[in-house]
Length: 98
Image: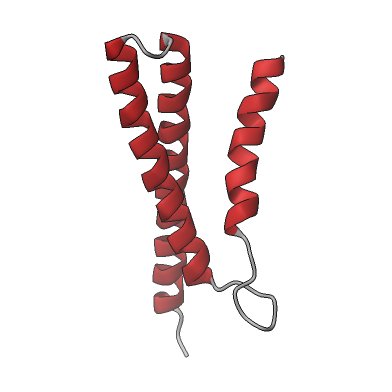
């Protein structure tokens, strides 16, 4: 049970960090959110690669390595789904008649 809580917290903390206001109105643009999400996916992929190397070298337990890999996999899948939804919305707007 403790592991699940720590995993959930590890997913929530990066999201809270990435949603910081960057302009005077206190709002973050869609592009900035998308860019932050892509950076987070990239960081997770690098951490996953590093964890694989550490498991191979015996520096890290296989369970920890698998958790890191799953985190990277889930973040990538989420980003791909976000991209698909954005493209669907764009196509729908393009089909609208003015």
